[in-house]
Length: 250
Image (tube, rainbow, N blue to C red; front, side, top):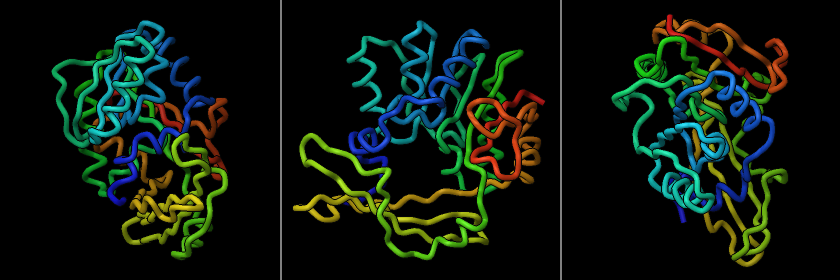
């Protein structure tokens, strides 16, 4: 099987089962902010369903029909109400504003061109109610690690998982870094002992460097009002693992 990694929603959920500090952070922030919630790139609802389970009016937008179908199934299974919408985060119009908008788990980095990022930020701004906040997390690029992306296929033991139907699944990744485009281009391979490479899926992720981020946000009509280096809210630093950004309308 080939196609995008997001065409295999159940495998994605087995590899990334959800939970953890990111869910806690977004749940707590939504609680402090109050009101309605919009998640862009919501995937299978890892982050959004726990927010909706607390009774908040939640909307999730994603480009992948497969991921949305799994999100609907999971929400229905839990008896949680969420409005799911298929759309492109670069340019969308839901006809209303929200009190809290977020993009989690590097989903923003599927936008490779600066113009696409700016267009996304402009769309977000149009959907922010007065006093609303827009929060997202992306990894903080490590130049040494990017340079080490040499195209060699390597195992990712931390991502291996057990599929109830197939058994133990090994995950391997081969990546190269396109410095001119700031994009890591990879192929993810899923294998079992009896079924090698039953999925080979491409995945391309942009790097957004700390210096360019405030400018991109400004061009999109947003203002960066806080940037943190981890889920505990420590100040952002050069060696921080992620950029956790809090924004408002400019």
